[in-house]
Length: 425
Image (cartoon, rainbow, N blue to C red; front, side, top):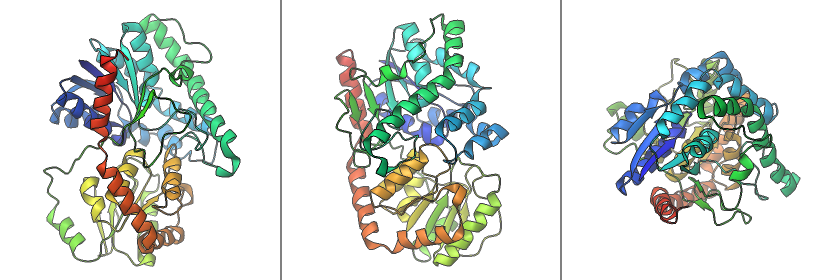
């Protein structure tokens, strides 16, 4: 079976699909991953076929429109968030969509990340090829929690939660509608989608869906049908064969486990300021730390001997050796932190990061999240002390880590995909 997987975004949006592709390839499928050039080396190293999609996500986040998008947070409504996302990405969109067409030629099945869903549906329609959404965030309405793009407000209850899915889907579609319909006409020769769009069709009970997260982190909602499959996380174990630098290993082993702080692909206009906040918070809390500079979320300034700086390291190796982890709350980083069995402190910048931060707190495996726009050394210090010293929180984190580690998300997904293909979906 020839399978093309469309995925766009930062590293956390790509690696789960590389892991899934390895599993699909091992089961006898020919898998092609279509994504940005940044990740070509990773994909080729796994023996997988690569197809390019326009765009460099780091450059998108570092230009002025990208920085405004990152700074949206939750201070303004989700429609503004989505509009700023479009402003950041619109220059690459026409070429990216055409690249997706090329990547899907000859495929028997198209699988797609959430942000590529509209392209996948259209290409599947044109080529008469099956499409299987495989998302890292849920999009099906649920009474028990809101859309990941909305602010969780438990006191507003189920009606609020259900409303957030409609608003998120329609807000996204209406901003995408002119671009997608123009592309459907000019590149695919297809009629336009209706004003309501195709996203409600995806929520229908007969539309097959995979969710690549843990049912122990986000259980299946009672109203979700049998067409929705929660497989467990799709982990890419990056530390296999990796040897840490001697200085890093020595630092970790020279005292009590440190606290990790890093914001991965999230950039800051003032990374030095954020770094000073982190240094002061660790000092006040009385804990050693490891900070990861990532794409610029933390700056390059002089550090005390109690803090060790890295650019990056495999989180699946690093996190289990930490006392707690502080990060932005991206779906992939959150998954790796939870599997490590250590308390998590989320500092969300935008988008679904607020949802995962809320979920971490609801599960009792981390303190309340601190929005990036409100980050200060006093609050971060208090959260670090709570995460490291709360024995009940630590115990819950360890237990959840064991549950997640026992899951076989990739294996479950491959089994479901094979079964669906045999039944013609």
